Structures are given as C-alpha cells and as structure tokens.
Length: 332
Ligand code: TXA
Ligand code: MG
Image (cartoon, rainbow, N blue to C red; front, side, top):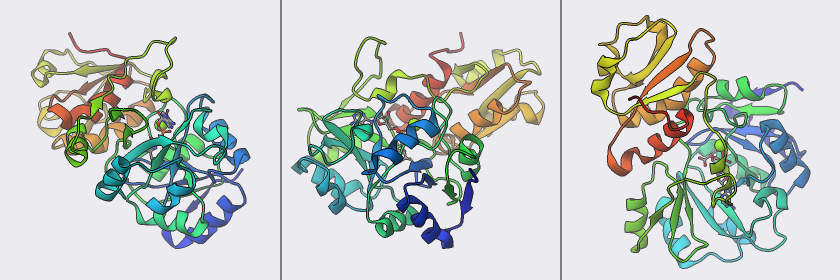
C-alpha cells in the first residue's frame, strides 16, 4: 500500500479515505494518532494490525466536540462536564461508562468504559467534523516504540501499512494526554500528562488520586496499556536522576546522551552522540520521544544516558515515559 502524505489543504482527501474505512494518521497537540472510524469494526481491527498492538489494549475515541460523546457515553456526569468545560479542547482524556452496543468491542477491549479525547488541533477538529464520526486515536507508532511527534516518525513506523498521514508539523506538547478515570468513586489519573493531578483537583473541587502504574503480569491494570513495554529504543536506556552525576560517567564512543544544553556542553563526546533536550523541562517533554528515536536509528550506540527531572507534578509525565523506556534502570 502507498502511504500518502497530506498537507492541510488536502483534508478532504483524508476524509474520503477514512469514509472508505481506510486508516489515516493525524496530528494532535500531544503526539500523532492513528485514525479510523470508531464505529467501523473492521477498520478498528486494522488499527491493531498496523500498530502490532495487543488486542486487549483499548483505544481512545477522538471527538471534535463535547456533543459528540453523548451518543457513545452511558451518561456524562457533572464531574466530566466540569473538566470538559475547563480543559477541552486540550490534552485530557476522560474515561466514562460506555453506552451498551454503541461502539465495537474492538474499541473498548470489551470493557464497560471508554476513553474520550478532544484534541486542541484545528486540522483534527475539522477532519472529524467533516467526517461526522469520531475516530479512534492510539498513538501512531509501532507498538512498544516511542510515540510519534512528527509526520516523519509516523511514516518511519507505518509506511505501507496505512493509507495516509496528515502532516501538521511537530506536535506542541510531545507527550501523550493525561488520562483521568471518572468511572470510579474517587477520580484517578491513570496516565500523567501536561495537565497535572493538582490542576484537575482544583477544577473538580475534590481529591484526585494518582495511579502509580505498578502492575504485575497477572493483575488486570486499570489502563491496560500500562502493562506493556513501551517507548523503548533498541539500546538500553539509563536515567541520570542527579545532573551532577553526568560528570561521573566515563563516556565512550558507543554511548549516547540526552540532556539539557547546559549539561551537554560540558560532556566530551562527538555531536552525533548527543541529543539536546533543550533549555528546560517543557522543552524536554517536547523532545524526549524524538531523542529516543534518534538513537534507535543509530546502530553504533549501545547505551543511552538520559537526564531525569525532579520537579514535582510538573515532571510526572516526563518521568513516567522515561522510566518506562529505561525499564526502571537508573544510574548508580
Ligand atoms: O495524547 C494522546 O492521548 C494520544 C493522541 C494521539 O490522542 N493517544 C494515545 O493513545 O496516547 P494510546 O492508545 O497510545 O494510549 C491510550 C491509553 C492506553 O494505555 C490504553 O490502554 C488506555 O489509554 N485506555 C484506552 N481506553 C481505556 C479504557 N476504556 N480503560 C482504561 N484504559 C484505557
Ligand atoms: Mg501509545
């Protein structure tokens, strides 16, 4: 299959392909998603196949506005309305009870809940609006690889497997949306993202729990995706929690390093072994997946040292993704 790249003035061509049941990747403010009409079971199954994703890992349903979820949610509780009013469109995914038989089991993984997301991205908003149906939207990477933050990343992983990619340039945030579960008594953040638990708690006016993400293979995790290896380049990743420790590492030519500019400039390695995370944590969120992909494509690198951050809830999302990529491996 030929994978077409669409520019923003070719949105109608992308809509046509989706209407025919084809798969088209789309930009959001977090990472690129892999779209297919959410009510078309055959297309949804194609999404699992293209990504190589385990079939018990449910998909996000991406909508263009709040109104669209009413057809698919069993009910939209007051708490959800508050969050939607405050954070949508934006990087917040909300888990609600699904209306029975409204969506194929392939979308929900057979669970009684469904995850709704309304991205803050004009192209994607217009795409879904024109299509008239919500689209599923898992990150548009091959399963276990870092999520794509450019159309090139998507092409690298999925060329020949999907009909098209809408190129919206680099994504703004760089890490996936915050997921909050509202199907339980006390709201709980299942995956940290740019919107922090504190901000959610403030808007809701009630306590918000944080899932620690630790699940054994035998448990059924709340967010099924959490049990799988993730974001991992082929070379082992080591987290360097204390930036002073970079001076203790004996860097060799088969090592890569990802850190802020202020740290990189003190490390004696060729430029190609260094990947800049930028100037601060917000830059680092934006650059993390791109850096992991950069080293994944180099076969002369045997180990990658990556800067850790300890900035309270602001660094929760970054550390969650980095710890997964590193499989819990820290320097020292
Ligand atoms: O920012 C994002 O959310 C991106 C962009 C493309 O929208 N999408 C994304 O989708 O990250 P994905 O599939 O890569 O991650 C969604 C996570 C998975 O871990 C999945 O297990 C979980 O959400 N999830 C989906 N539906 C669920 C449900 N009903 N109950 C619990 N977890 C669910
Ligand atoms: Mg993903």
